[in-house]
Length: 155
Image (cartoon, rainbow, N blue to C red; front, side, top):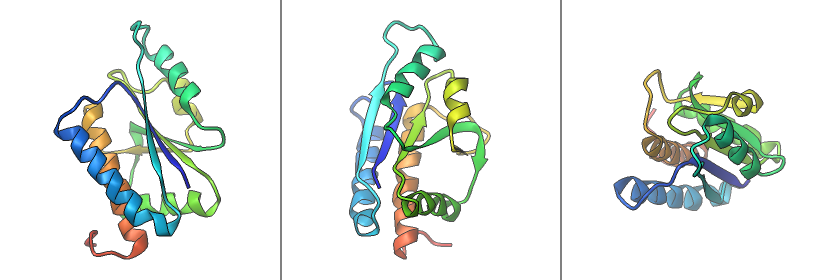
């Protein structure tokens, strides 16, 4: 199962980027035997500042054909880490790739949101996109650990 992380904006060098890279590497190492990964990160940027609709078009063009679209959105479903792991396993077992979308400062274009098969919320608070990337990368690694039965996740 290939996983694509599509994010609006660029993640510059710094601690957040280092954490994302570390957790995605851990995910790929843990998930490989489970049929999870690799993860590719695609950054899209509306350089003309045309707004959410333009970002939505860039996201739509970046979506891999046939991949299950999962949005990271404050209006999404709050789920436990084991529930998140079950979502990954369900799409993997169905032979589907997944594309996770993190929107820009104004959120995700309503047209993209409407096409999502799953929408995940990391809570009612609004998080900066760079932290959402870290949190998603960590949850992917945690999900692989849960599915592999490693002791990383303590229930």
